Length: 288
Ligand code: SAM
Image (cartoon, rainbow, N blue to C red; front, side, top):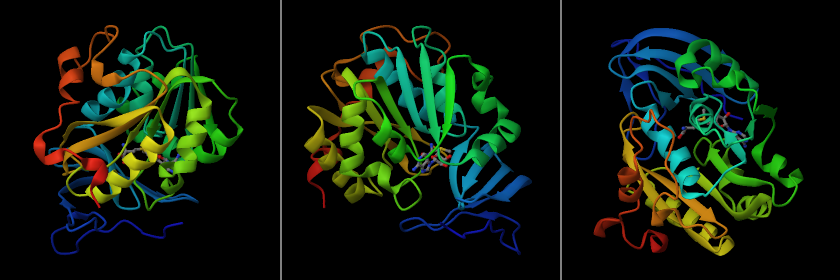
């Protein structure tokens, strides 16, 4: 459990993010909206210049109003549009509500299970980032489980979910076990035939070695697996990688059906383009 508290530079008054690999970010803070320490992590919601309201966990930015729709639309609509139908969807993490909001746009989804470790994240985001969840918290198809995603899958009946969307924090946080091979085996067991796992997997440039190891684990478990990308503005990593493992459906082939209207980033063309791998990012799996 991390003890990292929030930190403001006393001279500039800027909010200081925790150090990541090779760089540290300072945000021009317009207003601190909320700060608390849960049993799992330090939680801050702040209003930032340009980026809008943002959630920080243990001093690492998780969601910013400015660009969260890109990440959430790509995490949800790529797998759901690639499937001919999706009745049961499991979200692991996602306590800010953005992934949930996008899943609720699909009328054929009958059950949404959201497994979030930290009740405080949901409570804080519902109060301070209501536009991210955008009413989805009241969707009658939703069941929230406050639990560890790994432990939840250990108990999940086999063949249950059409899609498992892992919207968790990075490795090295309470989400560490959600990147393990045994977790992917549990997910494979819990998926229905043809089903999908999709997970946020950092940056193909800055965390190339971590991403390579994740891809190798997925390839060892799923019959088909791979990576796709979207732009990342607030994470300041250029490209956000998503990894996927599936029991038959290949999302790189493009959407099998239209996504709901009203998306601001996702289109069928954007879906297909997300799987294009430029030469610099080829053979990611073999990076060390
Ligand atoms: N989009 C974000 C990113 O890329 O960093 C993830 C945002 S979402 C707020 C991450 C959530 O994962 C947090 O609310 C955290 O509490 C939750 N989480 C971390 N470890 C978890 C676990 N083992 N089981 C379930 N949820 C977990």
